[in-house]
Image (cartoon, rainbow, N blue to C red):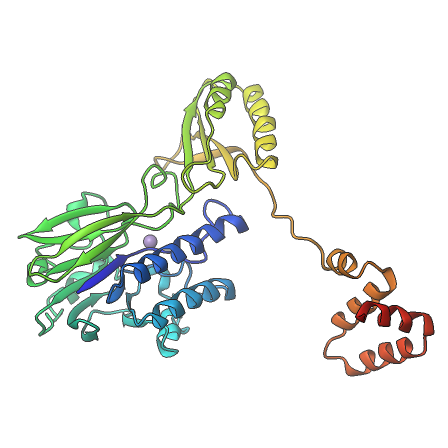
Length: 389
Ligand SMILES: [Mn+2]
């Protein structure tokens, strides 16, 4: 039995910033993992939460999600998902994963409390204990009620932070999660690839498929190919090729920035990188101005996608607070409809006619009027006739 364990795809995210092209990066990484699942003939894709970036995804996020999931369905690959905090609406509205579950695009195993399932996969039964995101304050009350599935092959899927990560706001230890009752623990929430084991059972975070902030930026992105054929799960890491590269540096002079930029490559994915510059205290306002001009030029030449220059706030209440000194990115230039139509028809009057028809779609009276006018205009009719020819 072969599983592809992925997590934190955050579909719809465009961090850092609200750049349209950056949003596409997340869809592209999602497509890459779909292609890997198909290529590797896995029985199922295990998604450990934060499928979407927001609990009210845009039609665009739904579109890319559905297109990818449809490919998996056509290859008879099951998709088993637990909800992360980003998939959980704060109010009583319909959770986005519940909708995808209802239309048969994926299987939502747990939305707001732990659930146990037995799933029939191509190569046999898989028992799953599924734990969605819950706040660290309440998760402890639920852990004792998590039922270990009665199946030969059993995995745990959970969206939470294990105590072994040694960071604030963790949820539970691997012992508290009874990880040794399973063959594998598929974890999500932590955005950096991490692998550990408890009593010989592997517990794995594949990490997010794209970095969402500078802390995650230095790490490569992975998915875990998990073979459950024998009693002990074996994990093969597959590195993703599409994620965009970030360049994060600290500088104290304009000259230093120029030096960093001279070695600028677009990296493995061929996409212009995201540049994130931390200004040391002695970087002058004049340096920042020069840097901004230089960087705006690189953005317009598409040698970088976007940049941000920040200074660490000295009197910051919170450690790590930053003040933005300069930032920039190129707006995606979409051609205007008028321009496209004129380019195709190569005639001002014809273009105006077509645009008027398009803009009054649904308004039958206006369309009738436009067509009548056209029918009574010999010159215009001959233009249309020559166009049709
Ligand atoms: Mn996440």
